[in-house]
Image (cartoon, rainbow, N blue to C red; front, side):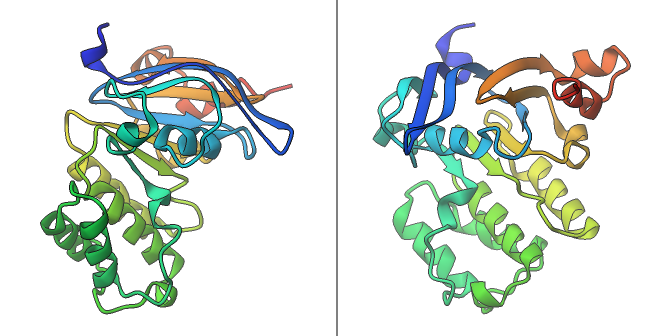
Length: 234
């Protein structure tokens, strides 16, 4: 596989924080145009790995390339990360979030955001702090998918939300993720995302322990959930 068909290449990635090993010797290559499940127990390192890929965390050992870009500044421009809203003022209204994203990111598509917000029943005049947890997750998703990126990272997008909200978000993910882009979803509730996946990556003990095509797992008569759990048994 040549670099033109690789959305993400990680080699020998290790990361420590406060003298604690968070990730060690992570190697991972993801092709373009895939939906990938990043699966692991709580504390396995999923969120930290996403932050490193997105350029939100630095001072790591090893290399990370997104769409051929290895420098942090250039890599950030290729990644849309669901946590990019974390520093936003909770008093902002939904419409203000769109204005800020338009100012911060040249690749932010306001028309797409407005359409997604409408499909997800988000009130443009509502303040972030007044949104339910489900609607905050919807807003996070709309913001993430409205950027034109090579790699989309969704960190626990369905955590703590109801079934109907989850269905609406799943439908939006399938419809709005660009065909040529790669989408990585981290989750420890595998049943929420198993039908979406093209590939499965398992993290355990601070490193990637498995990567497999989802269809290969299904062809063996095994569920994605059972495949994942097999690495944590015993």
